[in-house]
Length: 405
Image (cartoon, rainbow, N blue to C red; front, side, top):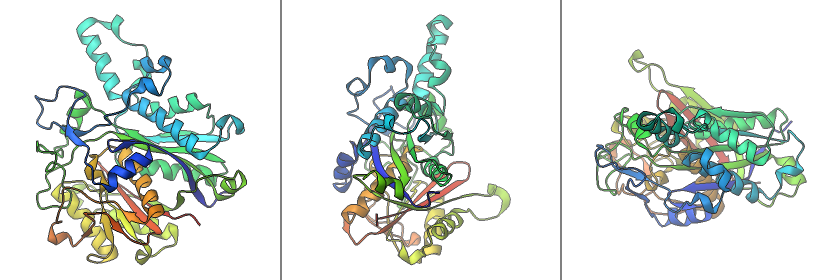
């Protein structure tokens, strides 16, 4: 049985860069990628900013046969899977037939594809609707397409827990490893830059309506007034330590040491949210105390109410100003389930390089939050990071990663 899960490959696409090296460089420079929406005409909407993956050209990475059957989100997921497997340094074809599984998460599925085909239906008639509409919009499409592309016939799954899904997919992958699965490709690539996806997010009343990219998404600030959507994500190769050593894995980015979830009670129940409970359980799972956490990658909801809940949980667990906290997603926007997956990648790189990337556009957090918010790159001895994710509807997830042994 595998009991020690290591991450040996990663593939990342984010507004801050294609590939983890470019993303890391831009994150340390505080290079925000939030700007006006370009994927559709957003002029008539109250929110008009997004974090887009600007330099991604699918035709440069994927065969032409895949383009008509895939959404923009799935194309990014396919490329992320290519990069993660290549980074891990092995050919999936050399594994046993059921030697590798796939677990992904998404909040919206291929909504841009779905919106376009529904528009065709309404404007032109059913004969103009693509046959691929039957699955291209679906939440599980990334898992299916990645499995097919690489011939991965092991256990597969798809999770829908909004933002928290980016961590939950990794938690499910670890369960598969502990059941004896040799390897799992897991993570999340997400984003729905289309009118259909946009309206669904506007309905939450949590999106920022600010038009200045430097002011639009400011979690933990007194001026916090919502979030900016983003797109992108990361996929990882996870395997047991023994497997990684046996095949001479060229990368060990870190260990997935602890993971837990907790669900919030109904808003009118009078009971407190359960983020702190999820963190405590993740720390217990990792057999670590709060004093052993070197940095927290915050969920950073960007609304006053949700920021206060997260700050209170951190204060309860670590004490006022008790641990460095950062939110690099202020450079990308909240990328659905893909955001926490990118946070995991960023945390692993921070452990490797000994630098905490900054939170941008928040020169000073609200004093009541009592956070040690990292607003410029900070060098520090880092061995352990905590990543938090909260999904709309009450999902709370916490994941602990540690530097490789």
